Amino acid sequence: MIIIMLGAPATGKGTVASILSKRLNVPQLSTGDLFRKNISEKTELGIMAEEYISKGNLVPDEVTINMIIKRLNEDDTKNGAILDGFPRTIPQAEALDKFLADKNIKIDMVLNLTTPEEEIIQRVVTRRVCSNPHCKTIYNTKLNPPKIEGICDKCGSKVITRKDDNVEAIKTRLKQYFKLTNPLVDFYDKKGVLTTEEVSEKINRMGKDVAEDIAQKLLKK
Ligand code: AMP
Image (cartoon, rainbow, N blue to C red; front, side, top):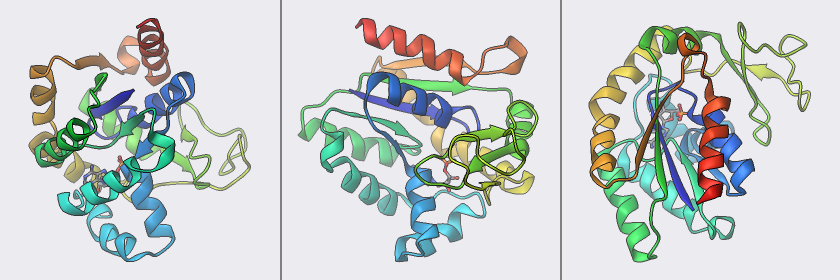
């Protein structure tokens, strides 16, 4: 099963992907997490990627494509994956199409999440994440703070603010999203695999609500 998470930053892709991963029993592959792991381990890839990520820019296609294809060839993804944050450009989507076509695998769903822009900015500045790469629980200082400030409820590790979760970087990330990633909505709509869901406090529908509905839908298939 291949599910692609699409949507601007902080629309809830990570939250939805993590719930779907558990409910459908397929791994969540987050390019952002893979980059952050490389950054914390100070690998060559991480040092290079940090230059782009800290400013809110996309990492070049070639590097990103090679990294995810390598990951998709690992054994645990043989029954599928939830792609969280990839593809983010048309060339990335084309490279993924080629990889999947070679293996005769089809895309089950592209889940496109939308959130009003002012809510995105608010969410980014209040977002906190567990620093433990095996946990990665997402918190929000307003809506869903950890019980003890700065400590993850689930694993006890430090809860931190991502380096690119600041107003300046999010503005760049949003610009990049509309220029480079949003064209994928049309790209996948034309293939007939797109499902769009709004995630917003305004309609009282958050990531976990969307994830539950989509999991039910996919499990019934
Ligand atoms: P995320 O955790 O998905 O918000 O990703 C964090 C950052 O990693 C993004 O703002 C980009 O700088 C970089 N990144 C993640 N996925 C990709 C991708 N598919 N292509 C290029 N850059 C990416």
